[in-house]
Image (cartoon, rainbow, N blue to C red; front, side, top):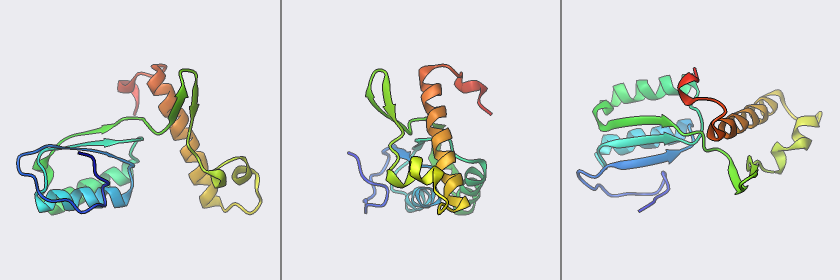
Amino acid sequence: MDRHISAVRHPIPDVPVIYFVEPNAKSLQNITADLQKGLYSPAYINFLSSIPRPLLEDFAAQTAAAGTAEHIAQLFDQYLNFIVAEPDLFSLGMQKEHTYWALNSAKTKDEELDYVVDRIVSGLFSVIVTMGAVARNTIP
């Protein structure tokens, strides 16, 4: 059964959960809340892209404060933040505001520009990792 991470769920004792989530603060807070409520155990957490170190440290602090570390079995970066349309065709799934116009507009704020560039780099890196051009165990 698949559920959105923000949907209301009921406890299922002794059943593992597999999370596939974007690495963001809201998702991590929802996971911590689920584990505090004892909804599932153990938890296998899979991030669709690489989790930034500061966010990982925040999650570790939340986990320690909530006392839910024993419920987390594994944590993975899956590098899946792209869409494959055909064997030789992929998309980063970026909306209109995150395209050529956003990169070249004088109206784009620096924070937005940083976000767009980071998303492009992360998506392209995911494609390269998936193609096997970069070994996963060599990633810092």
